[in-house]
Image 1 (spheres, rainbow, N blue to C red):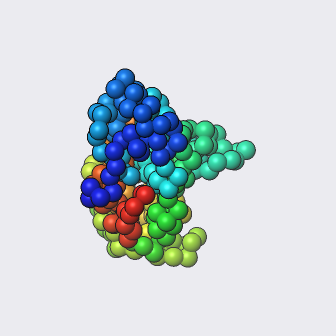
Image 2: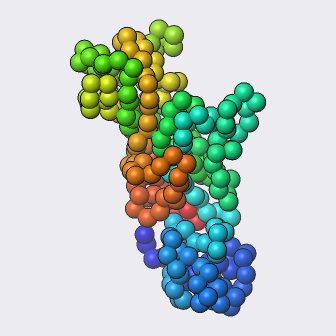
Image 3: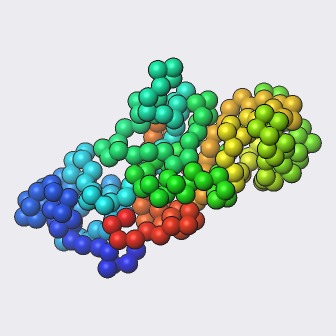
Length: 245
């Protein structure tokens, strides 16, 4: 990131309305301030992409945009309120700043969910016509045949939606498991595709959205996106990280 967007840490803390610069210096010296998970140093520079905390509290300016990678567990419904939901996202996911999902996962699926307070990013990610890659690992109830995988690669007519899926990348991982990369976002698309070729999904995990990967995260874990990973996400989404973001 360009240094022109950075400022002294004590000034940043003061600009967030937490305390004065002098008090911020005291907190830094006392080891109570962390930047990207590491103890802060007096006089260091920080930018909009840095995660700055005093204790457990995340600090941000009013115009700061935050994006979090969250491992959504099975059984969590992507909604804030639903009397019929076993567990809602607002109950499962907690963050000091209000964040909204950018591209949902159905209740029975698990894996990577991007949470953000950037409305532009949400808008870009929710557009099915944008062609953003999303990668999944799928396990089926019965053996998945080569012909079934090939049919999904070419695109399948989904009768109930009256739409044909776009050609996609499909790679066999085992007798009942495969990797699939989609560039469209039809409702319960992979489950419908498997049903259309005569099989059924047993488990479904999203492991990547554009350049952001689930990696070694466990269900319920989350991490703030920063640095090159965040910049690349915005670039691939057709946006740009500017001042204050």
